[in-house]
Length: 304
Image (cartoon, rainbow, N blue to C red):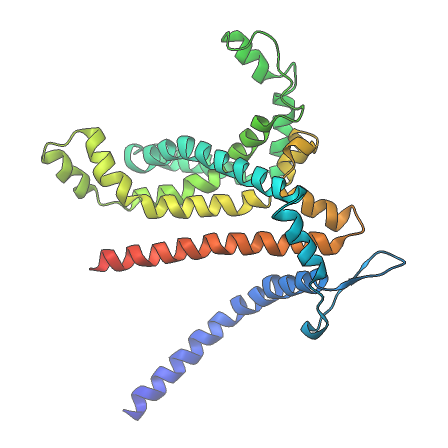
């Protein structure tokens, strides 16, 4: 018994040692930066230089700046920015589902010999800078760009449209294009793990292809669909490059990320920018908790 306890303790120490690099990475690049944001949000501003004076001790924290930001979010100008951001993200997520689900389904369930090639094509956008891809879209969406040329050739548009003049569809299109690979890959993984015998059983029992998909494939892919949605939504909510490069930072399409960048880098109110970071993190944390709770419930139901 003593030997078994000692062996268990050695294994525990060994696993703890293997986990230490990851724990150190998490502390250095997540916990410390988040605490620095807290210190700036609840700190002071130098009255002469207008630079932040972080309050590293929680005893010295001042919540006045956060209170003002909350007033502006829940009853002022920043509230419209949050609503606009979540509207863009919701529309972009719908676009990712409409585009990404058929692609992920085809690669996971239909493609055989070409699966490796298609997966490589899906991963390929990650090799190119997001900034470069947005700049490429800027050229495509010019008045004389290929988008207007194709729409004119298809007789879907009589006169060329200036897509870069602060139009919200441009931002949504950019978000869909930029983040749809993040949506496809986890969904592909979930669809690929579905037992093919379940689908065959549905067809053998007389169900049509559509009925089999709706009753078997789609319900079984819900966990993967939720994971793909969360992975896509999180970076979208903090995005600011898309609006900056596709609509030249138009106020009509300004998102929360643009406000954070402005207050932290382009103004003398870094407290406001840090407070917005914390508020956005809190809202996304609620989303993550919902996802985790739902996933745990589904796992428990499956085990039963």
